[in-house]
Image 1 (cartoon, helix red, strand yellow):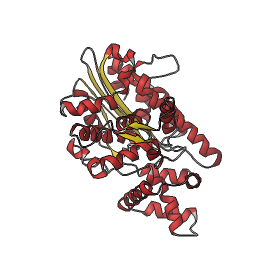
Image 2 (spheres, one colour):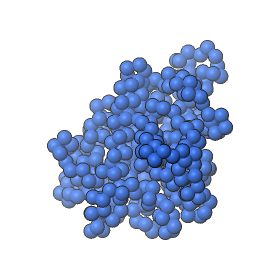
Image 3 (cartoon, helix red, strand yellow):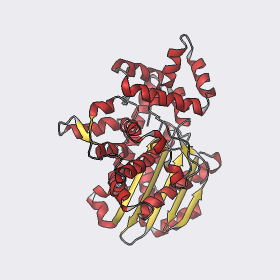
Image 4 (cartoon, helix red, strand yellow):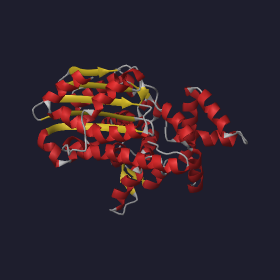
Length: 378
């Protein structure tokens, strides 16, 4: 998700964005396997939650062996950032299982470029393209687009999948899972263009006037504008020059509005979703056939396969938000689901959370004493 600010601050936040997303993406392959090396502190997470408990900006829900272990602000809706892409992955797998889409259908990389805005995803899309380009290809199967959405958190891939799967279908997923506290999804990368759109519509408006319009805009109009922009880009994408101009508009004030208006949900709802993915019985086997290869990037690491039966996760971040939802079943049949949401973070809080969240998850999965201890801390 987007990182940035104005001038030096802008690039500082983009740099932080790359660090955060790099952490989350590497976690896909290494998260549950890293050993504590003295630079991480698993207890930072529960101490951070205890400190922020009354702010309403942090929530944690953990289930262990089908028992509620921790529920901190479980019903507080918070921005999901890229964690929401789990919902798209589920719809992708359902449509693949039903034969509505062909996971092997070739997708031209230039089709994804229609939705790509450089420097707004911490380099996620570029990293995904880079590992593809080693094979000198100009198209990939649809399943690889889904992989890029989860493993690299490509926003361009996400917007393309919105077009393929249908936004109405995607927005039916939470209800089908029994989730009632989930905001409607919309093309969030396209929403980055709304400030520019308003500026073009009303020539001569100052930045403060545009900010005021956006703050006063209701969510129905905001989503409609994002959808309209997405639909326009399908047929008439922005030029490289227009993309550069868009970036000049996205200072921290506009990014804060964008971040605050991302789809919200609760940790209790997402821990329920993780439990359904972990149990392997909620959906038909055909759905898991397509869903697991996308969601369970962790299992591509041979070391994970030494002690895990299956595991998957998706994280997300903005300059103000850090979220993650994960599930795992080890070879002793212990099942764990962990969902952590945080908002209104400082730069330092972002850094510390991203440094220590991995160690926290690993410690919880492997250390019975730690599992008991964090209850006492919080």
